[in-house]
Length: 422
Image (cartoon, rainbow, N blue to C red):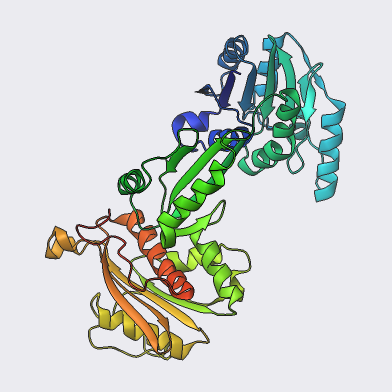
């Protein structure tokens, strides 16, 4: 089956907006065992849109057009599809009903710009949009199923899940769904991880696809198989991979490191406090984007070494705290535990630019301290990078150290030691 994707919008062409919708569409199609064969991105020019819709639909089985369904003058998808199909635009009664219902629900008046979204090619069907004003469009053109979807990401996500995927499943019942298991690991680089798996599991079955997706701060490892194929292999090899990666796995499926940590804290009825320098509060931000994180998050302090002001949570000056040091982080963890209701505390004191003063081998020095009363641990790490990457990795380091402590795992793991696993 040939599936083509057409993205439209000047903002995509100029880089003002980063395309994330194509990955959303691809992930949803993959659940059916379908893949995108080609992707074209063009600006808001009517003649170009008409030409591309005609060209792509002439060879594709399915053409998904994303964007250009809104109320403004540069939203041209409906008009372009109508011209390509030789069908004039007219007010679609179902689109009008949905728009009126949506506006009434929010207490908003109807206007001409809104009504533009109800002017669709004659003879088309709508794809309902449960949370937005722009409906999708379904139309047969050149023996190709054309599906037009809105560019607003959360609207697209909902419509893919509730409308588009079920429609394609019904339209193409012979597709073979995929089964996928995903593991999120922290502390192992992509090249080392591939080598490690190759050496430890050399007889990996060819019917199971092993894939990697690099990201920050975690790396995703996934096993993919087609339903009906490799029965009995998928679960068994997932178990082998899980056993190999062991405590480097911080989450599975759609989970994240912060999800796992908040869940562990909630299960144990514990509260956490954080202190961080050079990360700009990234640890606290990661935790607080988890639903109901306030149940377990006690306090967060963003500071620079030596700047834990007297009177703040009862903290006092500590000898050596003016530098990125073991004494500083241990003192901070102790005073956070004493000055708050937290059961656990973690502090990361880092300096991404330290190599500029002390040699490249010292660049990205990090001192981490973590633990509970009477069980405070500390260790130095090196992250040979800077900027946002450094902040993301160091924040994840702090959260993962607490996760490991809660699970009783190795207290001083080797994440990024000099000359180690990178």
